[in-house]
Image 1 (cartoon, rainbow, N blue to C red):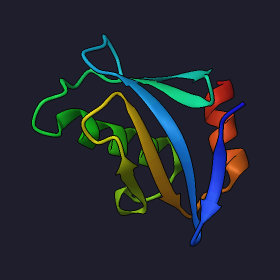
Image 2 (tube, rainbow, N blue to C red):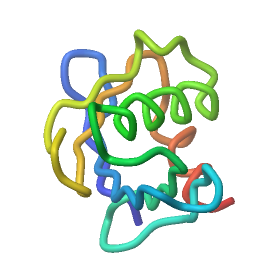
Image 3 (cartoon, helix red, strand yellow):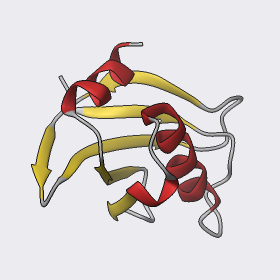
Image 4 (cartoon, rainbow, N blue to C red):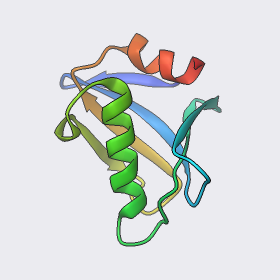
Length: 95
């Protein structure tokens, strides 16, 4: 089960990122975090930018609604998204 919280109108959750993957994909959930694979390398914010684009597309929100609030330089990140419900993020983990 994803660890989700809401603060100031934003849904906050953890994401575990694996850069340099064969494809961009959301692979489910582990230890309360959404598992995300990205083709982008973890240099010059390329993986972070790819993560924001992927989450915005899958949650059907603009990129400006998705932001990284913690862990910008690590694999485990905290994400805040405006305009989504907890069930929307849960569905991503179940696909």
